[in-house]
Length: 348
View 1 (cartoon, rainbow, N blue to C red):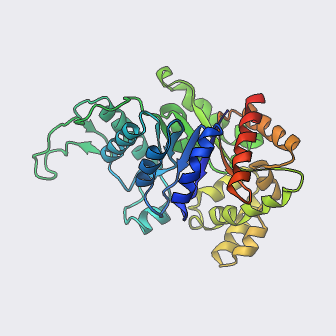
View 2: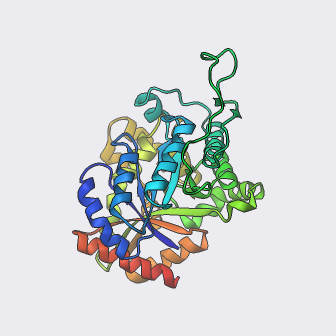
C-alpha cells in the first residue's frame, strides 16, 4: 500500500509545506490538497510542486461544477508539467450546499457530468482537436448557441503525459460503479473495510466488468486518522465533530449522501438522530451520537498491534493507498508516525 497524507486547507499552509520535504524523505508517496470552499487547491498544488522532488501530488478534490471540463484538463496538464509528471487529478461532485450556495451553479446530473468531464480531459491530453457532443457539454457550441464562431481546437502545449491519473471521490452506488469503470482511482469517505464489500462490492464489480483494461487496476484510496501507542485511544474522539458535520449537516433531509452512507452501514437510527440534532443546532449532542464503531474502524488509532490489524483489514478489503492524517503534538512526532506506518504497510 502507498502512504498518502492530506494537507490542511484551513491555515498554516506555508508552514505545512515547509515540513513536507521531511515527509517526502520519510517515504510519503502522495500528498492531497483539498479545495472545499477555502483557498483554491491549484495555486497550492503548484507551490508544492516547486517545493518537492519525488512525492506525487493530487487534488483532493476539485469540484466538477466550478470549472469547465476543458479548464480542468488544462489545469491538470499544467500541474503535471510543473511537477514533472507527478500529478493526479482528483475530482468530485461535492454537494448542493457548496455548489449552489457558494458557486451559484445548479447542482444537476453529477454522474453524467463526471463521465463527460473524464472523457473531455483525456481528449485534451491526447491533443485531439476538441469535439464533444454530450448531453451536458458541447465543444464547439452547436449552431444556435453563442456567436457561431467556435471551432475545434487542441491544447497548444504538449502535455507531459496523455494519461494523467484521474481520481474520483464517490460514495453512491451508481457513482462508485461509474468510477470503477472509467477512473484510475477511487476515494470514498468514512471507509470501513469490514463493511466495504456489502456497501460497495456490487457497484465495484459492475463497474470493473465494463472497465477498459488499458486503465489498469483501480487504485482504492482509504482515508484514516493515524496515531500509534498504548495511550492514544482517546484521539478517536477527535473524529466526532467532523463525522457529525458530514452525517448531520452536509445536506438537507433526504439530500445528504453521507447520512445515506451511515444508514447503509447499518446505523439507520443513529444517522437519523445525528441529522435531527445537527440541523436543530445541537452539534455537540449530534457528535455524541456518532457510533464508536464507526470512529474506531475507519481509523488507524491504537496500539501497534491494533494498527497492524487495521492495516491488514484495509489491505484485505482492497485498499491500495492509505490517505492518513497523523495525530501528534509536533512535526517530529508526526514525521515519526509517517515513517512507522510506511514500514508497517510494507510488512502487511
